[in-house]
Length: 109
Length: 260
Image (cartoon, rainbow over all chains, first blue to last red; front, top):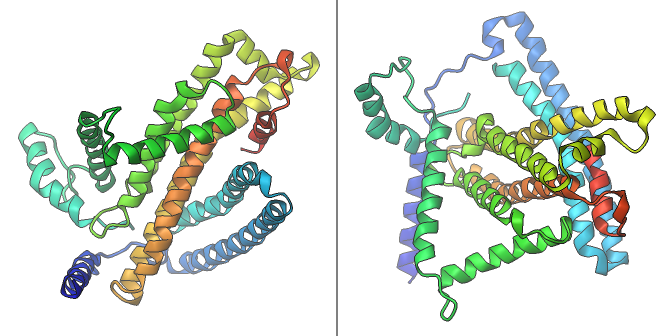
């Protein structure tokens, strides 16, 4: 049994090493295209993503706090509250995701 | 920015490239005939169809097999959620929502297997699901209320607000497929990108394993949210009008549509 586990682990690790992506692919980032503009692009996209992530985290924490309080006060309402929580979290997260998509477009497209 | 997965490259070299050459379709030099995510979605779709056909053979009322029990649990979970969100008379929507759930979940989870890519990390594939949902819930609304009543429902309760409200509702309805597709695509794509960059810049494979666990969790949540939003949209489309104001959680849920 133990030997089976060891064999499985080793095989799994081997598969994982095979799956490590090829390192040789060159990327044409914005930074490579025009150095001056590229620097500002990198800086602004990093800051934009950071602000979006921070605000999204704060907002989601507020929503989750309220949801947990609601559930602990009234456990009978768990199912309804769960649906509302997931919906709200999805809407909040979407704003950060839009920022992510815009950043990706700026950097790579 | 997205690397080709090994299985995608292999299938392209083994099947699709020779096929394209045989059919005389010109392929851009340096590219494969079929994009990576399309290969993956073909795998998912054909795999699910084959699985369903295989599982259907052993269905029985007296002696359910393990697969049947598992599928029944999934079906009951989806039906329970629909009963909670849409209300009564929900069995009509099971085919679309159930297949969306299984399709998206399989697609999301497939990316966690080394050598594969998530097909849902391509905007075209998520957008196709979202457009299907958009057409479907409008069709259901029109089928239930008739086209004039459905449009009147969009125009709001008071006639002098109608031009404004109609425009607002129109925009919010057309924003729905956009936000649905963007949400799924952004989540899965970000996760794939994190795994790739961890593999590339930090350490080949060990560091990305915790992210893959997180990815499993996020895949489930995203599939859940997709079908949950689909249900909310459907319930907004088929809800009863003012003549039958039933105090049901339904009405509270549909009021969230405005933020969608």
